[in-house]
Amino acid sequence: MNNMSMEDPVGPGKLVELTYKVIDVKTRAVLTQVEFPIGYVHGVNQILAPQVTAELEGRLPGDVIEVPIDCNKVFGPRDESLVVTDLVENVPEDYREVGMSILMENEHGNTKTFIVTRVDDKTVTFDSNNPLCGREVIFRLEILSVRDATEEEVARGGPVTAEPNMNEIVGPGQKLKSILD
View 1 (cartoon, rainbow, N blue to C red):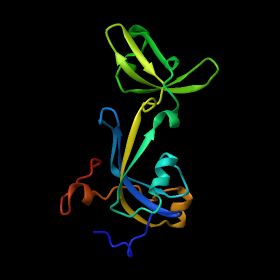
View 2 (view 1 turned 135 degrees about the vertical axis):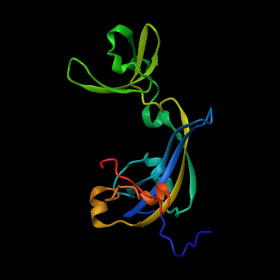
View 3 (view 1 turned 45 degrees about the horizontal axis):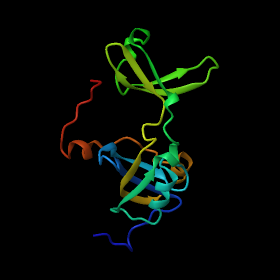
View 4 (view 1 turned 90 degrees about the horizontal axis):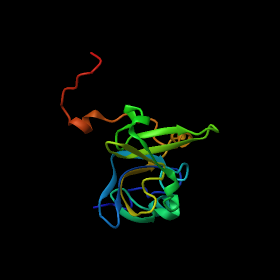
């Protein structure tokens, strides 16, 4: 049980660590899941949608919140003109894998990221719409820790040491061998 008097709530200048899932409202499918904690300094940077960040304000470690997001308001409606299909022989073999992200450049030097969404015997389809546009989703966040950020963390907008604690991953007392040896 949370001891509210001993814990810092999420607020400006606090380093917040959390995990989250993005769930499609219609299908209930988990679209994205972040299991390794991400950290940010609240009020300094925007790694999450402003609507999500606002809902975190005042929350405590251990809290699990759900924030509904209409992605049409965040990313705009789906734009079919951003979907391109080409003959498979015109696409390098390395780019024929569904889910691959490809940075493309037009004749004016402007770049745009496309994701391979379909490959068949004759064609490859690329889509530059944000994968969440046109969806309603729920961000389910679990706040793991909240503390005062250091000056260096405020300057960087997040944790300074981003290396994982291997004891937390493999368990205490496990022997680790470097892959460089």
